[in-house]
Length: 231
Image (cartoon, rainbow, N blue to C red; front, side, top):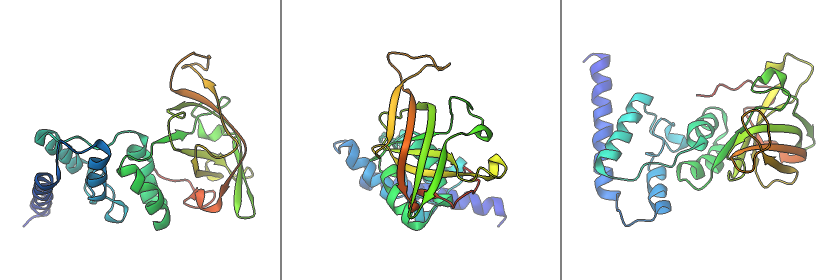
């Protein structure tokens, strides 16, 4: 059997398993949270994630087929948002098993929402211009700086924060990624802003100030000064 034929057979076997699982588990009377719990813990919310991170290790194209099967069956889809799109795959690829168990489980089951905090008032989305700093202090990191144009920052439970941890090297080699609970002391959501930084009365794009925000050492993802590849 050729490699292509083997892959096709493997994909069809997984889809067959998923159809059988849907038949046994989908119940329109379930609450949304109950359904997402079943879906996520069974590995079907984000099947591209590896098995140790609540996934099936499927290719993206095959995961699309899973979504299509779910829709055709009439079942509610997986929780949406940056948690599944960015946080979960990045943590799965670069985090420890402890971080995967702590964060990814609540993402695939829709319990926690996430927000990315990369852009800054003086740098835009150019990471080479980051001004936010994180300094090691014993068993903690202390974060200071500003972020803006941060979608859903007011409703997210966790924030993915990019900060400079080594200012003495090339910008792309001296930054680190932190996983920060939004309710951490020192995280201040100042106001909503528009596309060009202008204040607006309503909206989801926030300007956020980090003032001596202390996070534990295990809030660091992938080690200090490590450029992470987002899968």
